[in-house]
Length: 239
Image (tube, rainbow, N blue to C red; front, side, top):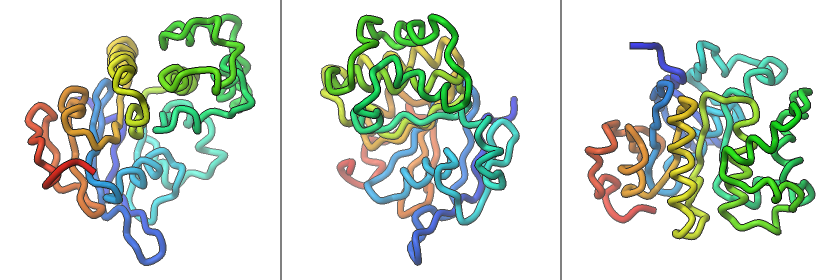
């Protein structure tokens, strides 16, 4: 079996005296979706932030493509960041209200000092199912589903291998959730992307993920194939 793309070992995240993430371990292989589920406050988002190197952990290891991220300075992390990207819950809040769609998608490349090649932004818009005529619009002129597709396009600019999806459809109307999830499934099939999928909807997880890790009080208490997921696994209605 090939080495995992992402390997997290004994991850610890503390906020003062509170331990939000307590020796969490998991791995994800290329082309795989691991769902991280649990009630509100169980440590899912803190785990995601530490995995993305957006919050330095208080202990443990995060290895991505063989690189130990926890020991790297920001200057050393910068060239690696395009390879692991977030897609956030709030499709409007994750975009600058002042940037038009085409500029919002191009922004990660410009931050890296790599202006997009001619036609690249239009290509990305088509990839995520956006009409290129929307390129001149501002976020408030788009629907929530369209804004989330812009966020996905932004994440794809650096040709990532891993996307961390933090409740990517929970803020969307039910009528557009399926379209975004189908897009993510197609992108995974086409590009071999790996997903860390933060979610509280167990029925959705069973449909979308390959494996699921259940968190309680900062710890992973069980990992199993998603198709074997018990919809009462969290001990009651999802939070």
